[in-house]
Amino acid sequence: MSDKPNIILLMADQVSALALPSYGNDRVKAPNIKLLGESSFVFDKAYCNYPLCAPSRYALLTGKLCSNIGAYDNASEFKSSTPTFVHSLRKQGYQSTLIGKMHFIGSDQLHGYEERLTTEIYPSDFSWVPDWEGQGEKLAFQDMTNVVSAAPSSRTLQLDYDEQVGFKAEQKIYDLARSEENRPFFLTVSFTHPHDPYSPPKKYWDLYSAEDIEAPKVPFISYEERDPHSQDLYTHYGMHKRRPTEQETMNARLGYYASISYIDEKIGRIVEILKETGQWDNSIIIFTSDHGDMMGERGMWYKKTFYEWSLRVPLMIRMPIDIYPDLVDPCHISQPVSHIDIFPTVQEMIGSDISETQLLDLDGVSLTPYFYGKEPDQLPFPRAEYLAEGTTYPQVSLIHDGYKLITTGKSSYCLFDLNNDPDEIVDLSNNNEYKAVFDDLMILLARQWDLDALRIDIVKSQKYRNFVSEALNAGKASPWDFTPIEDASKQFVRSGKWCANAEVKAHLPYRGDTTSLDSDTMVGEL
Image 1: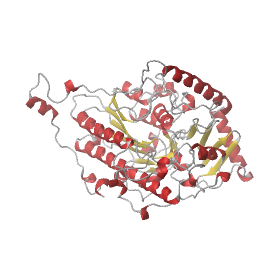
Image 2 (image 1 turned 45 degrees about the vertical axis):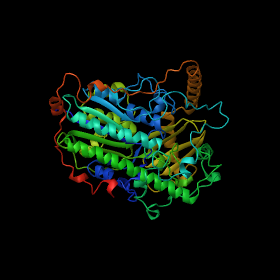
Image 3 (image 1 turned 30 degrees about the vertical axis):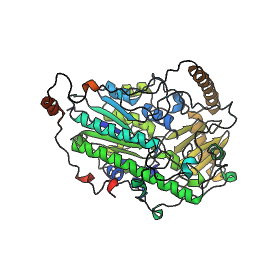
Image 4 (image 1 turned 90 degrees about the horizontal axis):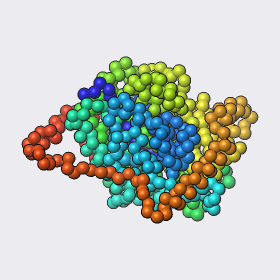
């Protein structure tokens, strides 16, 4: 066994931290995630750096804001030359496997991983490139269909995908446990639920009754009273054509909660197998999501906005005490952090040379001092960007000293006091009493971004990618979509092996204690 810990990154898609019991939402039935949180360091105010699937994952893996790596939207190429913490782990001797969604765009579908066991759920080419200058209507990938149609289902495309991810993950953990490989492993298991449509199997839908589902805390805000970016999203999502009724809103929230319960059972099963195979005590577990979902709060849906339900994500890091004996007890940490802090945190957890971290010029800071009851020398500084469809000007946000500043268009801003106004009701950007706060945050914003120059780069990138996409779709296409390959000649009992010998090598005795995850606590039995 390696003297370095294994690392398992568990991801769900579109899970707002505000929708989990570990963050105060006791209406959602997620006992396995809650149990994981009880043995983890739980970051109460963790933020994604881009409330959209692909760019959010790029920021998480690279420790860099997407504007610093030229990744502007869901069809931006993730360049092979951009370092990820998977590359870093691989240099440190880790074997690495990706199972599930990472939404990589481009011909490189690995970005440091040695293997992938599933394909992507979404296209890997430039077919989803926005066009800020040429679009008649702002490019829309979604309308209200997935909200108003929420209901239990026998099967959806999302379920097809996650069933495959769950199966492959369970098998891989068993394979790792009986492998003769002496390297530690990094395993990413990334599910697509509870991403819309909010249509889980009836088993999970039936865990909830109408009385379990609360109405949005912040009621519908009329179009006229919304900030400019929220107005853009209102039409971008087609709410001017079809606005969900109160009952449809409640159904969608139920379907969302039930989809979280579905994923909770998948995560519980992974933890159970890690314990059963004796790998739990030697493993770091990181659980997060790419972004949240507004879930009808303010009358808004999906993501692409900087309000809390969209931007705040779960972040739990479970550290093995046998490897890190000086840790403080697992606890909740109130300091705001973000996904870009994960790369330097992983670097420090595995003992990477500090010069390597400096070479990479990361935008985040290591969170490991919190695990020892200390604060980092430089506090984390959450910043976020939205540079894709549904707008024609860069949207950015930063969180500092308890305040959140949001751009909502060119020379248009919102300012919220998150400590005293966590629901972001009162915009303080034009309040003279907060002028000093606003001015200080504007200085920080200007240091980070030149928004006019950024817009020029984004439009140029869109034009280039749309040109290339049109060309690559002419003639014979060469898809970038990842195709998993299974070598059946190396599975089960094959030529040159006796049955008994093959069985002995494959036999894995029960080693762990899974009493904390027995059938009484698994979601499927609730």
